[in-house]
Image (cartoon, rainbow, N blue to C red):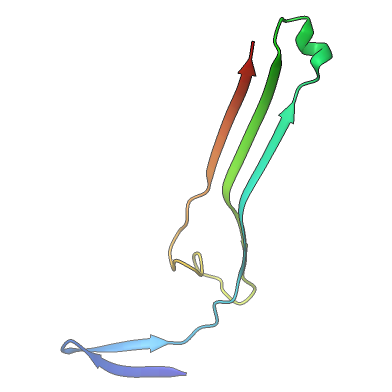
Length: 85
């Protein structure tokens, strides 16, 4: 329901909107290469790591930006390697 109120000398118009949502916040994948491949290269251990932050948001009744922050929310991708000789 729309509400009109006065805030600091001016009129403020606010509409209540349903912002229910489900967020997949972090996703991390790790792959360890087999030792049979690494033995030929004189490597003891090798891991590949990938992390994604702010993967997805499902908000069926919200068509604007991110419902939690009411604005754009960036997605971060981090890649890494763990190498032991």
